[in-house]
Image 1 (cartoon, helix red, strand yellow):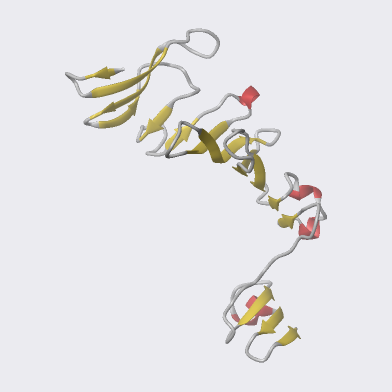
Image 2: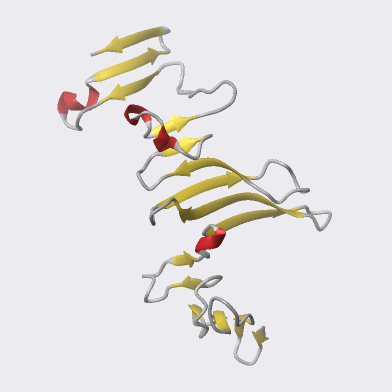
Length: 193
């Protein structure tokens, strides 16, 4: 609702069952955006609240998967709107967080998205897999998975080199104990230890 005399736009929760009382969930006014008076914990947006240290908080019910940030696109010549991407935050078991990055690939006839990358609570990153930490412990920090060809491209100018560097520290030679390097200037490959 919009109160023209006060210049305040209010999003109100009218549902009183299950997860909290009715009330104002979000207030937009000349003084800023704030949480309203309702006690509902889910579906609320807070910006700059004391409890959340000036962060944007997106809540979600545990039994529905967690919080979503959805990016939508609309066609300029008709009313079709579809989900193009989502960032999904959920529990990964035992109160460990997981982030999923999803994209829509089926076009405007379907608003569903599919997960393309996941970041686990352990710090493991998976592309093409939801379970990078299920792979061998010596190679689960970054896992690329696919049903067909899978690869990584290192692209640089024709006068420079692309490298994979192995380190056991950051100072001196600890930062480059081993190197796999391709030099584009003379089209040579070097393995250095």
